[in-house]
Image (cartoon, rainbow, N blue to C red; front, side, top):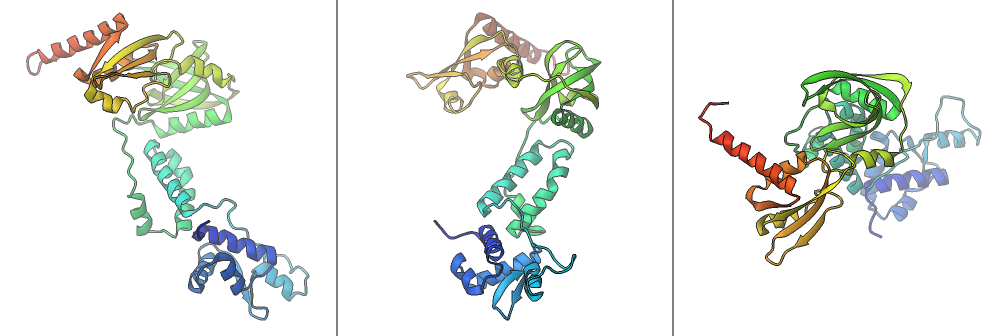
Length: 345
């Protein structure tokens, strides 16, 4: 086992003082296996930054918590109320590597955050993490700039509606929303029993039982125009039922009626596609010439066609025939739009 890092030493110092009601400087040095200068810095940090009431009992040559020192000075009897109390350091301790990993995770969460809702609640934790690492001010800012999360084509969600949705999911209550359906270009009122939140391709969705249509539906939260948590309990559904109804298709489009597509990628595209997961149940078959065949389930062709077109001439739909035709139609319409006169819509 290697040497303890600083946070581990803090925890060990606290334990040693608490267990023995006083421990000498020499004992601490032996237990921690650090230099006297390092131990002095640790003790000073605990006092100044962590508010640990560590005092030095000169007559006994030991370190104690202030409460224990008051008890000893009082002949073993507890001092009167208000003169001191046993100190407890935070109950969860992390190594410096773990703390830095948590800060990285915070950056990722910040990248997903819409309107700062999550950030407001996580800021106290972030401050504590910086404190445990001894980072503050410019040091902290420099540390956070070492990790950058980029979310292209992000669809922002209004913070007040996002917060209502989160509250409804966690409190297991119904939610009423005003929802804009893009395909119909119309707005409608819905009462939902929220089941879970989903973050997918840079935006948030709410999976819920819709009491108007009497079925499980997936709602894009950026299309919510108003939301309010109701007092009525949400209808509870087994998560297995939610997953079966909404997760079996391709991408964001659910549906239980599955079909399978076979795609053939060129050797150039195969270098990247072989490392990608398009669907949990995909089947990959490398070809002798370096190309790749993928067999993948889908229920709605919309998103699958978009991903196929993203690879341009480096992918070809082999089957089924209806998917081949849907890709052809998209390509025909694209070519036609480029064949129009400049400025013509």
